[in-house]
Image (cartoon, rainbow, N blue to C red; front, side):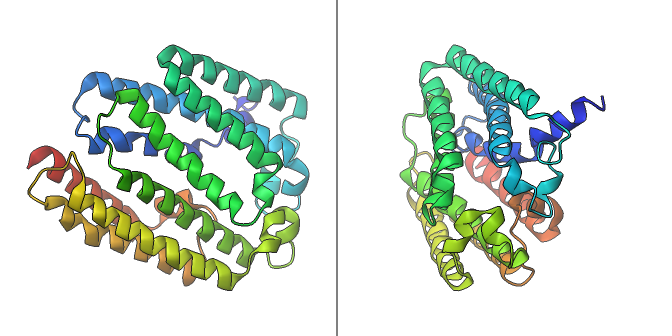
Length: 291
């Protein structure tokens, strides 16, 4: 078990929560109770989790020297030497190849989406993550591809474009918030551990965060007005304040608490944010499935 533990850590299971965006089409197309659709989405989710674990290993192999200069990333299994580079390559290639093969068996269009995810991540690791603005925009595209993968798996007839826009803007919001946290927490070595931080300033990031958070709320609000699969009683409009508060709370955390370095950690540790997500989930279930 002690030999397996470093590999499990390197696979970053806490990051698998990001693949939860694949469930957006299932939930908002009112197919959560459709067992075949639920089964396809769950299988796709598992495949994407293993795929991204392979990608994380690949990224850690390439970035191992820079990670050793980072106070937290230096403890990663590959950077710290707990996993040999050769072994990491074997596991990474196995996970990526196996996930692509499983995706092809599930659905050809899903396989193509997974392949595009791999190609974009390779470009991101070697090039795109070093370009200011493009680095975060690439992250946004990868989140949208998760939603697209979810749409493909259950064959949604009409999927609101506002949900695509909301996903894209929300991911930019989280991405710029993470860059801000990194810039603050590593004022002297930020450019060494992540080259792209040399192209950002706190003022610029604060302006970008304000812009994308505003558009996120607007996109979601427009979805509640015009979502093609929503009930005609406008109940979902009542969830707008919940979404707004969640974004405001996160904004408070990155501005006042200087958090944001790991969005998944904030969601797990911040009680008001957790309660907001639970409240929102209950409201959505009521609005789409019970009324």
